[in-house]
Structures are given as C-alpha cells and as structure tokens.
Image (tube, rainbow, N blue to C red; front, side, top):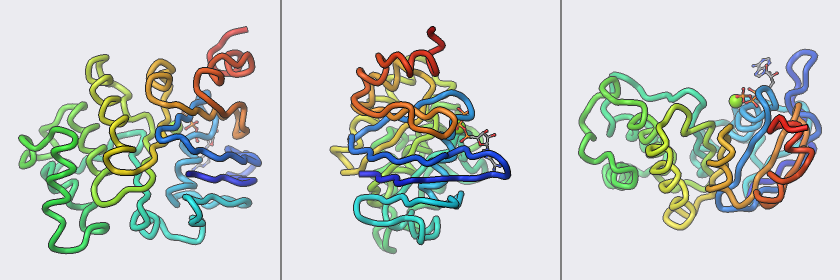
Length: 234
Ligand SMILES: Nc1ncnc2c1ncn2[C@@H]1O[C@H](COP(=O)(O)OP(=O)(O)OP(=O)(O)O)[C@@H](O)[C@H]1O
Ligand SMILES: [Mg+2]
C-alpha cells in the first residue's frame, strides 16, 4: 500500500506536485494524467530522487522520505525509467546482477537472477550484451531488474512505450502476474488508456500536480472531469 500525504514538490516557481494526498491499495494501480502533470515527479519522490518540500510518503507502514534511494531499494522498492536504462556493455544477466548485488545476499544471487530471467523469458539470451537487444527485450530486462530480490513495490514509468500491440500484450500479462508471484504491488504510468484499463483495478489521475480522480479504473475513466482534462473530451 502506498500512502501519500499532503505532498508538495517545488521546482523554482512551479509545483509539479501540489498538496497531493492519496492511498493506493490495488495490486496493480495506474497513474495517468496529461504531459507535465507530475507523474514522473511522483515516482521520483517515491524512489528518492526528488525531495519534497512538504508532506510524507510511505510504503505500508514504512516512512520513505528519511531513507536514501539505496535503502529504499533494499526495503523492496524498484522502478523503471521513462527511457530504458539497459547498460549496453553488460550482458543481460549482468544488468540484472547489478541490482541483485544490492538486494540479494551473496551466495543466492545467481539463483535470484535466473528466476528473474525465467520470469521475463530471457534465459536464452542471458549472455548477450545489452547493445544487441531490441526494444522489447530491453523493456523485459528492465522488468527483470524490478522483480529480482524481494520486491514490495514496483514503479513502472511508461514501461510499454514503443512496443507493438503484441509485445504490449505480452508485457501486460507479465505485469499482471507480479502481485501473486512476487507479492509486490505495482504502480504503472502510461498514456495508453486501454493498457491502463486492462491492467489496473485502481487508477489515480493527476492534473497540474493535483489529484483529479482516484478510484476503480472504470469509474475514474468515466468521470467527466477526467474525460475533459485528460482524454480531450468536452
Ligand atoms: N528537475 C526538474 N526541474 C524543474 N522542473 C521540472 C523537473 N522535473 C520536472 N519538472 C517539471 O515538473 C512538471 C511535471 O513533470 P513530470 O515529468 O513529473 O510530468 P509527467 O506527468 O511525467 O509528464 P510526461 O507524461 O510528459 O512524462 C513539468 O512542468 C516539468 O517541466
Ligand atoms: Mg513522465
């Protein structure tokens, strides 16, 4: 469960997050909103890359703001970035090991990496260099990095951007397996409303850093305020 209370982020004169309070409980929750709404900024606050000027965020009962990004990773927080971050001159297994080194005790790392590789279906290309991968494989490496160790909360920033419909569907099916197989909650940002509808039982909508709507995805997407602000309907 993610708890956000009275959160404010200030960059100079703008507040990309402005007095935001929300509780997200769904196993796979969605985060949508127009460009510049503050979605990535919220992920940056949760993962420790941006320090808010006010408010609190917690994962379950654990307050996050006093923890460094690495402490949060060790506490089970994982994220992927809007632009994929695969290291080109490391192998697929090496990319995942780089995370496992921080979160899995020595002696168990190889098994943890194998499990993550098997989950995303990249076992056969484990020894290939990052630079040889196509976009879909890169997105899968990112997902494997998120599930390695014992994740509790996985934050995905537009993880399916640029994928074909078929690849997107395969990706979505993997994400939907995460809560049961890894006992982790997932928060997904995406502009593809169909993807959000098919993955997320609960969705939060941000608009200029404010909470526009939060609730069951079908009712949020039917909300006239959401349709006007985000889906471009009048
Ligand atoms: N490091 C920063 N310094 C100054 N302003 C920033 C910084 N990061 C983000 N912003 C601003 O904060 C606002 C929110 O940006 P953010 O990246 O969180 O939006 P987003 O909802 O993720 O948008 P998109 O859908 O385009 O990815 C924007 O106005 C952006 O220009
Ligand atoms: Mg963004």
